Length: 515
Ligand SMILES: CC(=O)SCCNC(=O)CCNC(=O)[C@H](O)C(C)(C)COP(=O)(O)OP(=O)(O)OC[C@H]1O[C@@H](n2cnc3c(N)ncnc32)[C@H](O)[C@@H]1OP(=O)(O)O
Ligand SMILES: CC(C)C(=O)C(=O)O
Ligand SMILES: [Mg+2]
Image (cartoon, rainbow, N blue to C red; front, side, top):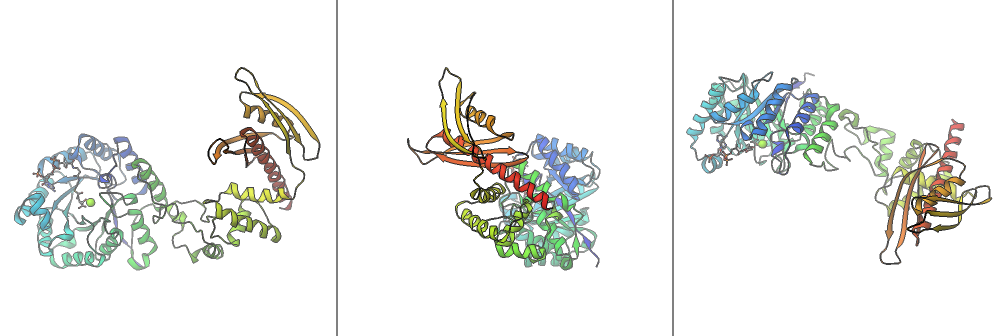
């Protein structure tokens, strides 16, 4: 099967920056440009040089330093814009200008206040003027998809004759449907002489959620360049999302018989960088790059995936550089996924334990939105602890506190072997004094990793809820306790984490012996 190459024209740094609220500085634009180079895009629209001094500087810097692709800048059909664009782009490897002029009746009459003939004349003279400097000229018919087709064909013919080598057909307001967009390309191909000598390009906006579908329809009807942005950012509802487009072509190569030369493994990294620097968050359910794009939560899907990934996965996450665990445990998960997750955490569980743990897991899911690995470890260790008598237990606690005193805690603890011990130690604060005292009585070294406190309920009689995370012999475990008293809750949470840590250590030793 012969696969036709589709050129990727990335306009994240121009149309993407037109997203309300996005304002990239020179260094941020440069960082994105270097990542786009690694992504191996074909053409990078680095900005609109005549729009501001800052954008001019950015385009110039990118054009001088990016070598893996052709760099372009947007320009109105205006000599002064073209001059500024040449100044910014001339140092590049393959300088390219992107000229545009609106062709729809509403844009010509209301915005440009020009007749059809004046628009043709302006477009032609601008292309001819730009051709004195630039080896590559792209010309765009802004609002092409609301333009009368005979006029569109007429102006396209004239600008090709004037020297444009790429003709872009933007759906500027995201209005067209895939079938109609395909028709526009078909019409131009049959009505414009010499059109086979130029590259036809798509540029679709997502106002009706059809930007990627329209781009694909353009490709089906002869477009060989596709414009879009990373994460689909851009003016209003944004542009065609390049990662969605490229992955659609890759996965459905059998249908489109076309492909890009993007390094798809760089997709996630590129998307994350653009999201971070633009401040535009990626919706969790966004195709290809959303947090949930490769995650399976429901039991039937997880079971299918565990038996054969192809049951529910049409894109392999590795293809686009995603490494996250695809199985999300939640209230809709089933036993197969739960057991597999336990195995991944290093626990082999017999059928009887599995029954108890799965029931405990389901009731935890009813009360907690997100069940983490820490929660699952706590479930397993608590299940063991429930049957254990050999644990540390807090018998009594007394704290001596005063603003001018050294804080001292006196604690009585029962050891796993049943013996009782009483110790006192000091600390910079009451909680530290408690933890120092407990540590002097433990047989294993403990490192406190995290301590959090919150109140449960309101008013004077609110309860204190304390979460503690500790490291016990290379195992990170958490403990929790609720009490009317902050210090008692702190001590109990700590001891609960220590007990879990000891069980966790022993379970790991047992697993190692089995192996
Ligand atoms: C569909 C798109 O995405 S097009 C790109 C949109 N991007 C931007 O506009 C971002 C950058 N723009 C800017 O910084 C400013 O708009 C500038 C610097 C380009 C121009 O600013 P100003 O000179 O103050 O003009 P302003 O933006 O208010 O109006 C645009 C002018 O350009 C004219 N114009 C619009 N498109 C074109 C074009 N393709 N070719 C020639 N003239 C054009 C308008 O008719 C208007 O002219 P007028 O002043 O004679 O009425
Ligand atoms: C400048 C052009 C190509 C554009 O962004 C549009 O028409 O949407
Ligand atoms: Mg646009």
